[in-house]
Length: 248
Image 1 (cartoon, rainbow, N blue to C red):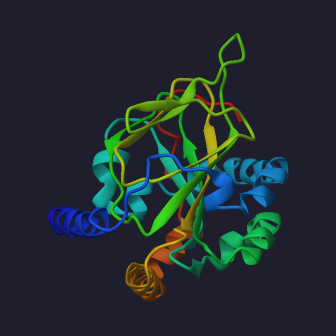
Image 2 (image 1 turned 90 degrees about the vertical axis):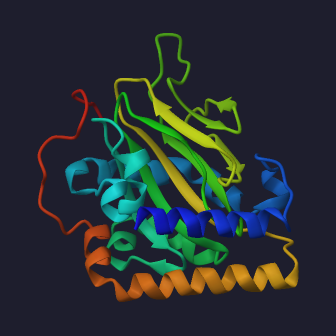
């Protein structure tokens, strides 16, 4: 299954690479002006994420949602957990209900096709990889980040060999089909809001293809009720969070 996923991802990347040429990091104001409402509310969003993190062991690891991603999610004994609120246009009702403020914002911005909280355990490193789908852009809003004794963030994101160390409330809009990695070298969980935003200004045929892909994956998600149940956190506790003891 992993080989099939890789072949499909490479084919999709090649198609989009031939038609779209944009830099790894893009100006937010030009490509996702609605980012303003999320930035202005980042403290309220962070509060909802912190509430979810209080029961972190019920949040699935990324490779439990997508086994094809085990090479980057289960690569070490540290956890990368994902609380999904929306995936390829499909809202996860139970999770949206637990984050009413963020749910209200998402309802106002239909070009956000996916939304999740990303929790990186202390010591976790997500190795370099590439996303498959250039039809969307990734908006990354930092909600909680460990810092060193000088107040500098000890968690970061590398995009196309450039490191970005975002402080709480800071954000980045980038193309995840470029090689990228993430790490948490601090002693507490790093929490970020991840939004996948429909790419603006695509040609009509690539825009149509992108919407078709999003709709098709969304339909598959609707059909996989077992996955939706896991995404809504209806899973037994599985012991400790991998890695050192954490503070929240």
